[in-house]
Image (cartoon, rainbow, N blue to C red; front, side, top):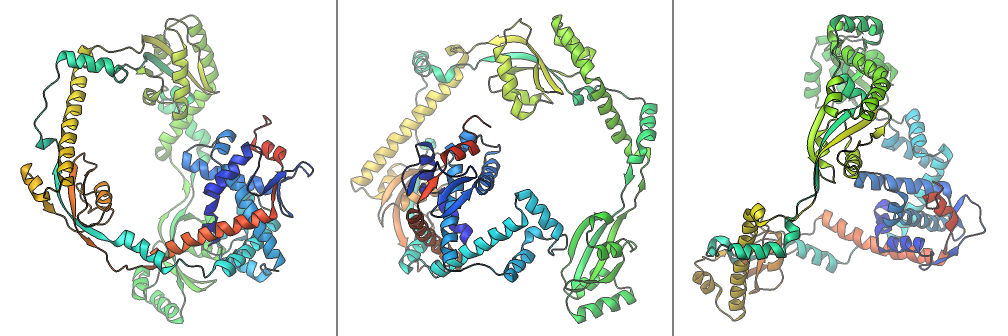
Length: 624
């Protein structure tokens, strides 16, 4: 519940906190900026301190979450603009005031409860789902916690949960609110409707050359070419060099002999197990084992659940009794061994034996490894030689042929998207290469674009096309199509306006439809989401829900058609409020109450922020 309630950190209150970080940290209970405390404290909430370690951990969690949404890690400035420091401080400040309250009430968690939480936490489970101490230590290391810090954090989390449960555990939305929400999503209505589109109007006159010329002059920006440069591009990387290397069979064989010790295949097996929780299940498997009954048949006959552990090597199985049993069986066999929850049956299949792999099995792998080695060894020499040839103004065609490198010729615009066709240029570097292309002058020696120590790009500019206004002859078809579409849309809009005016004047809906050679239809009842068809989609449905019975109007659906409608009937159903809806509404109400509660606690406690430390941690002072 507590995690759900923390959603307030992304609301307007969080944004306000982000604002005061940038404008002097004033307002909303912020009593000032700390100047007389240690450099390991970011803020003080009442008597509780938020340490730099606490803030860095919370901030990193927010940054990583933002990176997953954005696809890249935000800079410090972007993080501030997104309100990430505010969200981190909000969370820590809210936790601090609840911790203080919980400590005053003597709340917390016993050692027994903490131990139970550890054992049941799936983040610390091993391969078989049981608590794994090694995995526990690994997770703590990854998240930056010591064991004591983690246990203290869990104690505080339990304390906060106890407060929230005690104060807000019974909070629910009023029945009226539940009914309103249920009616909003469940009520339906039916409409009389007909559809107006370009099929029902006469084709407009085609524009004359003079009209098209005038249209082009008014909309010239839409018909301006994009600056383009036609270039030849060559990439040098170990992969590019390796692609041009041809190896003799004897070289591959010699490399295999030299490195064959590294081509050992580890024996693997598909391992499955079934927990036998009852004496009856144990006896069934013991009898089946003696009678030679297949494993799958015993599982099916006893309606048991199989856990497929996957394809494993013996070293990958941390459960030593399981490893010994699985790798002591023949393919298709099974056996019974003891487990934490009782006896368990272990089965193996698809045994891939280990041992030395032959040259035929690994020929391609050996060849690629040898090519890569030769490419890496020769990279610096090839780079130096290419630079010497470029200094002598040798064309890329000649260089690419000499070193058996791929040469790509293409038109490139400033966004660099066309460079996706060049193998070896990373997506996040295309813009940089395009910028270099547009900074260079045709005929001059373009500098190398060094993307890394083992990735260099060269290009020759073949043609430069500046942005320019296109003539009517060049874009006549496009201009004509645009003008016809505009005229069709205007004619259709005029027809819709006329229909709407007649409805407002009190003309009968059916009479209007017949006058337009339309046949009015009665829809099936639909919700605010529409009826699932392309005609009455959500846009049309929301317009229809804009009034009561007899309400009329026109709405354009996603297909571009106008739906002329009049509400025929309203079905206010007796709301069937399911558990999911109740929980959603209750949680929304609870979030609102909790937000007010936390705001009051924080205002009473007061928040003081060490601006200098915060700025340094965020890397906004030029130190990072």
